[in-house]
Image (cartoon, rainbow, N blue to C red; front, side, top):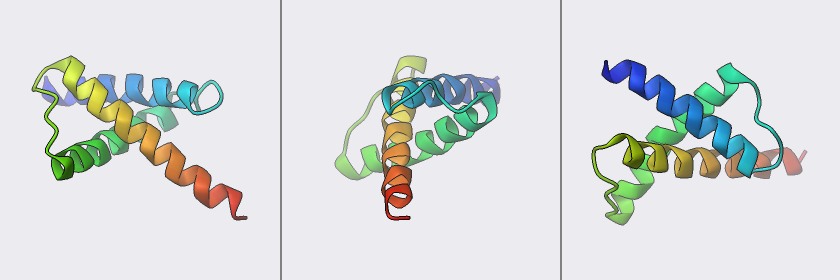
Length: 82
């Protein structure tokens, strides 16, 4: 059941990040991808900083949300330069 939770947490984190970073998200599939990639990115960044959010769903959601917002911010930097 862990994989299903990753998908649910990724979709929610991607949707929240899309709403926080200007607008209403990008649709379910893109939100899902942003959330999952954001979860990996957030886990990596939190690991570098020595931050632990715990093993629960809330900790995973926070990690994925921070990573997804960071990912959307990085993408926006590249879009502005064009």
